[in-house]
Length: 115
Image 1 (tube, rainbow, N blue to C red):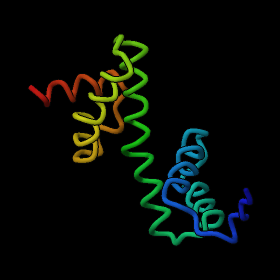
Image 2 (image 1 turned 60 degrees about the vertical axis):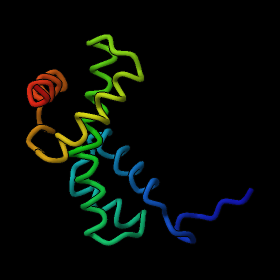
Image 3 (image 1 turned 90 degrees about the vertical axis):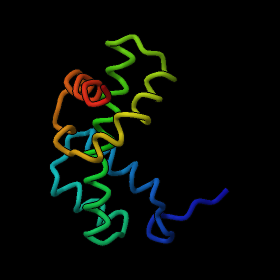
Image 4 (image 1 turned 135 degrees about the vertical axis):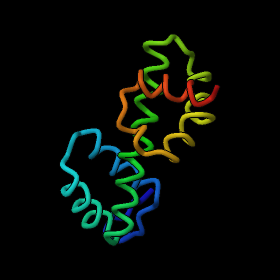
C-alpha cells in the first residue's frame, strides 16, 4: 500500500482532529496550534480555529471526564461512555464555561443539571 505525502492529498477531518488533539494535549500554545494546523494540514484559518475550539472546549473536557469516571468514580468503560455521550457532551457544547471546570466539578454540575 502506498501512502502519499500530506502535501499530495486532502487531509480528512478526522486527521485534523487528531492533530489538534495531539497538539492541545501536548500543551502547545494556542497560536502555535493554529499555525501548525493551517500549515501542515493545509487548511484556512477559520477551519483551524473550529478544529482547535472543538478540541479545547468540547473534546478535551469530555476525555478528561471519561477518564475521571473510570479512574475515580469506578464506572466501567460502557457506562462512562454513555454518560459522556448522553449527558456531558450536549451540556458542555451548550455552555463553554463548563469546559473550564475540573472533571470532578464538571461531573457534579452535569448531575445537578440533569435533576
